[in-house]
Image 1 (cartoon, one colour):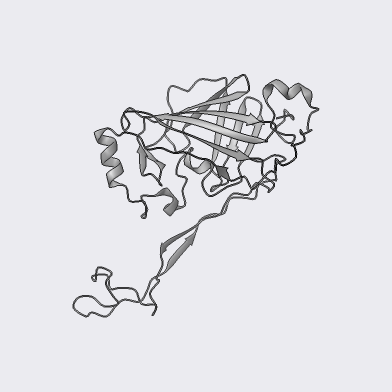
Image 2: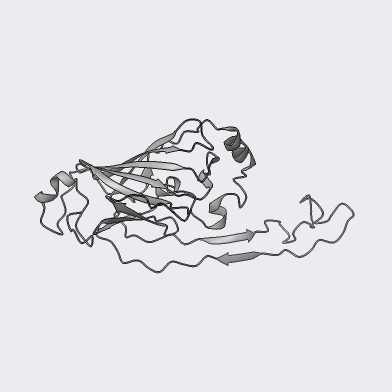
Amino acid sequence: MTDPRGRSGALVPVSRVEEFEPGTAPTPPAGAGGGGGGGGGGQRARVTYTEAGQAAADAFRGGTTDNPRMRCETTSILFDWTFDGPVNRITQSGDTITLQYGQLGFTRTIHMNAEHPATIEPSVAGHSIGRWENDVLVVDTVGFKPGVLSADTATMHSGELHVVERFTLDPNAMTLTREYTATDPVYYTDQYTGRDTIGVADLPYAPDACAELTFVDFSADGVAPDANSGGIGPQGPQGAAAAPAQTAATPAATPPAAAPAEEEE
């Protein structure tokens, strides 16, 4: 960022940072509008599974709480960066770069010019270290807990998942492209690869709220099927009276409002 404090300014290639005064931003060329921060061009291909990976994929049911989205939880560091067009935020402070996802306020910390610790508590975010290769930010992440890499393609992963991302800024179009490669010796026999591109947002960063709906009754008469009916009607096979519909909606905790960033992804 042109402001080394990470509070204002703009994303610029490392090789051009000396061209700008602290806090200033380059002028986008005509026609290079910011857009709403939505992802574009994401290409996610399936991988070839090992026997263990195939078993995990076969057991996954995307329309149930197997899917983290159904539990108001982050799916993965790859999927949620662009899913549903969120406004993300990138800030830099000292030796760390923080990625805040618009999806549920999920946050990752990239430790620059560091090594992974010997012991890592497994998590959805994992542990990320970064380095610059000229103007490309290379991020290496390990230490994941087993989970879902992409719910849309039923791609699962084990705790041995290893992700490498390469972020490249186009200062003319003001877009940020991420190329990624994921390997998992327990679940994959090859690599899971893809790329996505997002633009500079013209909206402030605001994490999406989420409401977990554990049951919704869509029947015309407001009566739920009997518990023993297999969902075939308001009464069970023996004609037992149906129980009243039980609708439970538990709003997820709303993250605290974030201060608007000068530059969002």
